[in-house]
Length: 142
View 1 (cartoon, rainbow, N blue to C red):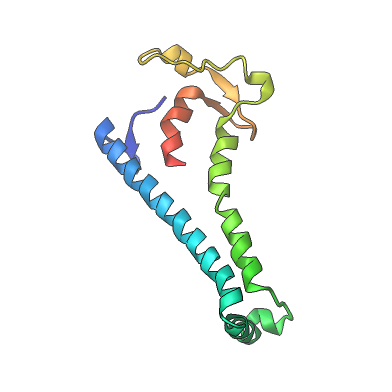
View 2: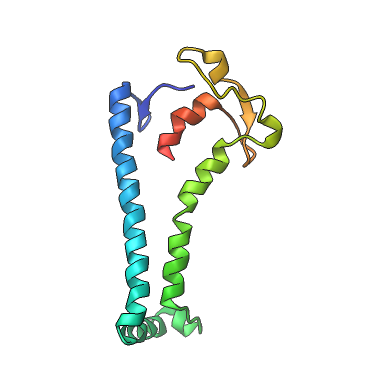
């Protein structure tokens, strides 16, 4: 289990907590703006009488993709990109949850100062080795 640090500089708990609270807020704002973009783009499909589609086709035809003959629906792109934003939630879970074989090895209740329990190694679903202490320490950075 490492010390509290911000940008590889050791800090106290309160500075570390404040830094990660700001990062969490920015992450929530990012997810919200992605959702708003997807929603307005899809809504514009039915409300703009095809104007947005015409502009998108014209822009796409003048781009490198148009010269390659690639024509992609703007609404499909908006939906796919919006769904991909959830990968930032899924990947940390895969990097922290233990494989079924290691499930019983993990000490889920770690008392403050009990370093031995916090440093019990296990293999995650993604195949990397970690400890419950490292997960608790690193999860806010995810």
